[in-house]
Length: 402
Image 1 (cartoon, rainbow, N blue to C red):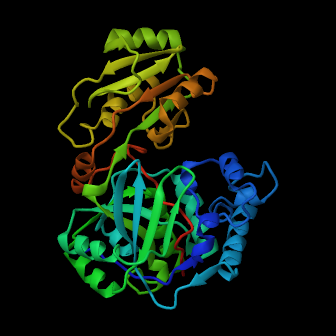
Image 2: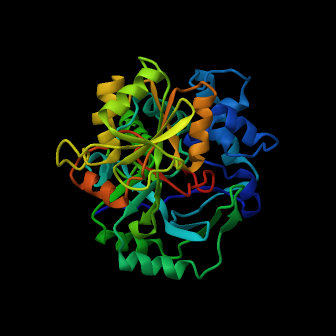
Image 3: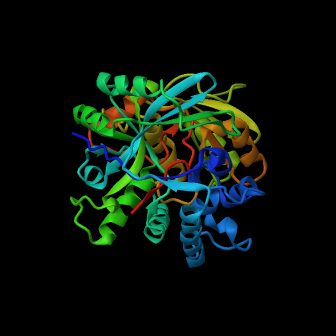
């Protein structure tokens, strides 16, 4: 049984929501955050990317940055443009992008469930990102952003969601990227909590680092993890699997050890590889490579084992290209590899290579939701950045404090 926990959210007044709500911290860098927040003093980016409130050039991991984030959050809580719920509540959150909608439940989940694998993971996390988010949580005494979970469709939960969205919405706005975000407050939270008693597991979709950081922050608090203290819960939006869509998560290699010419020759000798005018793989098992100004399609060899991880395209890429040809044995920590969300398109991959920032770009076929479940249920972990879920949640709507 997975726990769903109502919480007393700090939230914007409805008329201020569009000024405040922002993209999640991990889909933009500091420079992009600064540009997005320009002329928007209430933007929630000042809390989740507080380096933009400090002199340009400051390291985002400087002590001053974490202190500034805590200061900015306190201003948000105390400001005349926010309210704090008088009672613990739950919400329904719907996103509509390109005519496709997904609707889930916004509440808190349990650190104990995360630690006990009731909340199932599918990716390794990077220690540096864990450290960063843990410091933000502990200094702000808040989980400022929700993570995205998914669960196997349940008719009772679906019925409550359907009834809730017939009521007046708390927030309803269209963000700059054209995605509609609508949030309703659930009238009877206890009914929804009971409905989730039928859900055996949650699966992490987006936010592995924030999950791990929540667990570390709870441990650091010294409170028993089984207690009802709010530090032991963190916010999530839980979507039924039938509503979810996964995009590709692409890779770039900064430096090719033997140079682009030699690497290209080696690839052609090892694999079924041919030039292509389509930079997007057409089927599982194919990847597209951009180097020396041209695109190629490469068919990966069959999986080395029957493991659910080895069968993934990202697993096969690691086994047949990254490890033997680039000496990237751990994509989680190797600084020679970076990751580009599929929403940015293949033109971003071309830009990175043509600008000289990278020497190789790899366009992936998306991991499926079925593969995510297979890996998670087997207690295995995917390579980092194996899935990109779209559309993204907005941050700043409902903040959990402890």
